Image (cartoon, rainbow, N blue to C red; front, top):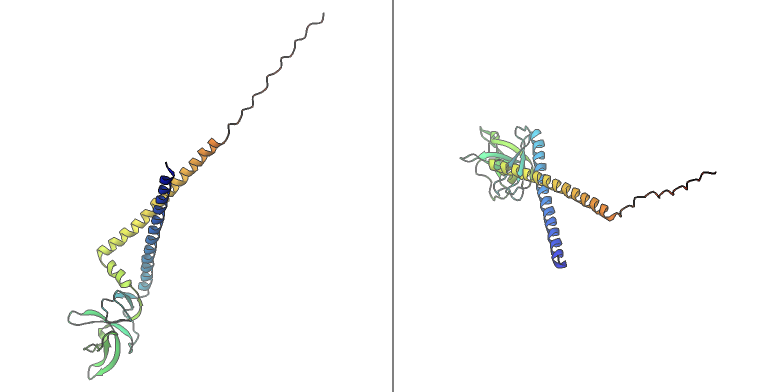
Length: 218
């Protein structure tokens, strides 16, 4: 093999190794992020919190499309002006996340809330009954709505499971390959050591001198 061909082969092998390591790092980072998000979600769910995905830009810049808003259904805390609440409005009862900008006492109907999106110029046309409020917003996780929106479908869950299995399978293949390379290197080193060692001379015992026979004395 010529020196130029050898250098090209070595350079190609290095590039493949670097690319493989980068792909593995990216895969594990994404997997770790998804797993951490799922664990955090389970902890919050155990404490009574739920996550709702933002689907419109009416609450910008507070919430953007794709963010995940943390709510706590069944919370008995009073609603005050400035709180963000989720409620169902309109003929289709679409869940809406808007801010309470006023409280009005409607004659013979009790207290009602005036709501408005932060990005909207005008408040919502209809007053909100207290029993229409589903929950208050307690926080936001940026971009989490995209993840949970995808995981809410069967296809999204299958894709996630397949991605995790792919990452685990790749790691197993890498471990097997590393172990094989180690064994090959150990075998090659052992063979090289045996070839490099000189043959040891086996000591040969010196021949025994013949003892002269004694002549009988006459």
